[in-house]
Length: 181
Image (tube, rainbow, N blue to C red):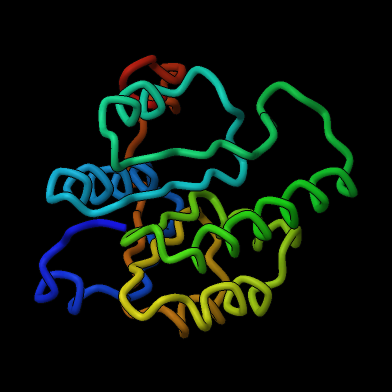
């Protein structure tokens, strides 16, 4: 448990959503995570649809003793996975998220790409809300990923939609190490 002054902890506990088709949802959540870790908060990011290797944020987070990333997803960019397997992995990840959120060890928990898991019908929004309900009072939650369901938008305290206006991918520029991953 962190030694954060009570006046700081007492202001935590909101649910934030970063969604939309534009780039920057995970990046925004990581910015918040590094800010929180820098202030001494205990931070956990659980990644729903990203595999456990080759992401710059994993390397950076290792430098902070109070910021942990758990990449529990499957790599859909290179693997063909059955929907049944996707659902099982998403449910296992949500179960792990419930355990971690309710443990009281973290001040900020980010569920990265959970909105996509709901949009793809791997998880039901009511299941996700069920995990968030009853969490320790001062645990801040961030849900990222395009396609946030309306039920999640209605439930959240803050919703930011990233809008893509222009992207280098449209010109054939592939994801770049250190920038996109």
